[in-house]
Length: 106
Image (cartoon, rainbow, N blue to C red):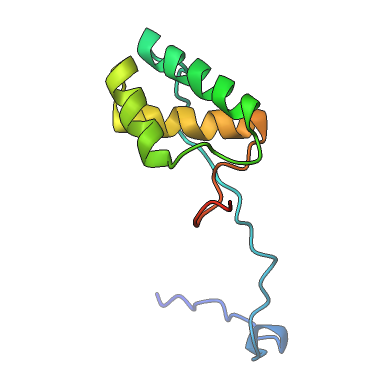
């Protein structure tokens, strides 16, 4: 008993050649893990301090980020990651221009 395989019709559409069509690129950031904020008292105090400083001078930071990082890490006992998170969140909330690269203007 021999069975015959059904034939697969080949249409002209399946044989078309050319460049593939791609949609617009989506560069949206997706955060897969939601982080509780602030995670402890030190992080909360660091965040409040940065908010006060950024609201006082939103156009220009009074010093380099490294100085803020060192003083906040010493004063509030936060980790590097905690400071970076507080820095980003404070800039986002206040709209301060503190994240601009390069030397500060005089």
